[in-house]
Length: 403
Image 1 (cartoon, rainbow, N blue to C red):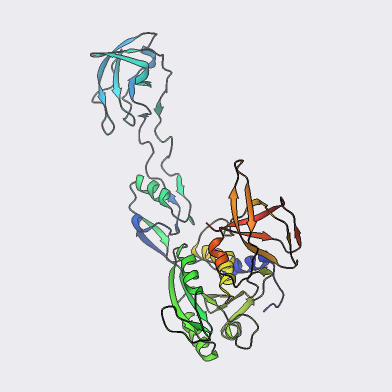
Image 2 (image 1 turned 180 degrees about the horizontal axis):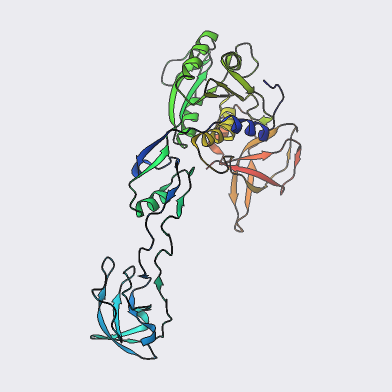
């Protein structure tokens, strides 16, 4: 176990390296697939469009028949969902609706605005070019195209695309099982009586809410007191039932902080100190095949480290491909800041966009990790890197949105 303070990048790299993606899959209905991770490439089985079709309401014609002011016989009407009974005859036109199949022998569609109808004939008022206003077969999707790549977290637009191919179910990775627990004899369950020396526990509901956004199966192990035997029993049980165990509290250096020592005894601890503020005492380890994330007990620190480290770990283990790290944007700071350098500081702040589309960020004056209202009032975390002790109004800083 390393006692060195790791940078956020080092900690994230170690965490992602330890996060082994699950391989078990299941078939689910498209109606149950939102937020699930695709287990194999989705391959097109149909051309889209399935045939040449009209991009406009108008008249399907053969462009070689048309001269200025040509009048054509209206051979019939083609609406979406039907096709012409016969090919287009010479010197004729089919009235056609958007999306309807273009009849044989037609090579253009004249917009209805560029025609004048008189009984069973139509006057073409603008010369069409071959291919005009026609959407060609397979122009959007061709059979055997890769529609969606393995590792994609499915959203509404993906499911609509799959459904348009006639697909009713899809193979996804099974849901990740994540256990959560809060440790500390000073904690009381909300809704129950508490001792005068206790506080109501709040980290579990916060972690649960963050992880529900990742569509995992959450197993709540409740609150466990600061007792070595109780903690050892809990983590042994969890290692047999969950893929990831996330605890809050007990990973610092106090006399009653047993968590990291017990994890080290039952399995191993990779690291437990990172150079961030808030959230220095974050522990990463494992017991058997269960990855262990030990978060600080302080609610703000727990919230920040869950966003920075636990969520990327979850994404990797779910089989999601691509960048698992949090999103950052650049913004101008609105006031001067002086601080002690040494750790990367994630300050609670509000970000706004001006009329020019530029972001501005205002950090709160109170940054105590014990002030939970600073999270509820914030819409972002403003980042000050380790080496920086002074920032001036107008300086550009990275910002992590909390939307």
